[in-house]
Length: 279
Image (cartoon, rainbow, N blue to C red; front, side, top):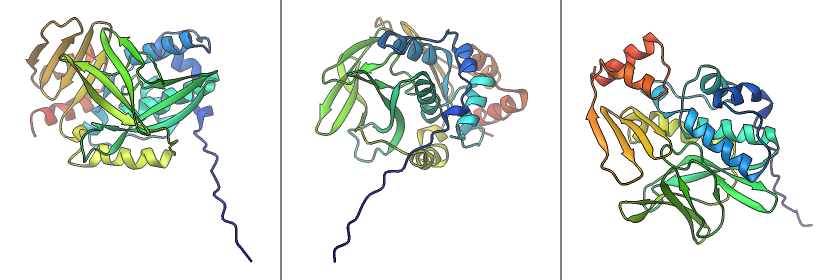
């Protein structure tokens, strides 16, 4: 007698019904967009330009929750920012509620580095016969979706990005200082929520994580990318002008955070200032 082995593929419940779609659209300042390639691009850019990329929660000593109701409360209702897991899970839920076909995946930032872990959430979206890389949580990365085709090349607020195949992997590359550099690499393996929970724990708590070492905030728009990296406030320009940079003090921190769209209360600001002062 032979025993047949079968592999059951679980039905994943991303709890998208927990999303308040109307509140999200008010947050990013859009009416309900059409389910179309232009509609997807408008939605993607509005999200990136409205909701900050930051690790404030980690600098406050907390691990961000990846449960969708908690993400909605933080990024939508409390008008806070977050990093890739929060941005990506929120945006994927929005797309599914609107009727897009979404596959949540994982990327390796610094793909060409031998010890780079899988720690970045991005999604693949299918619309008819077309597919796109959707990546609203990559800091100073994509403003709009990138067609999932070999050699796809698009402009993102003045910064060019392209996709390149290497075996089973897609490599997202940015044109920087006259050369193409890999931002991250990924395959098309669908992920489960627990995969992100594990990676999120590493990103938020491990001493080797770049997000546990210093405050990171990034805001991208057409032509400019504003960054707060530790004590350095930096403005980069897409037209090749030299970046502007200055060191900020703990006293200035609240004003700089507000200018970057970061909303924290007085207690949180006091804790961040102590981190800034090295206390």
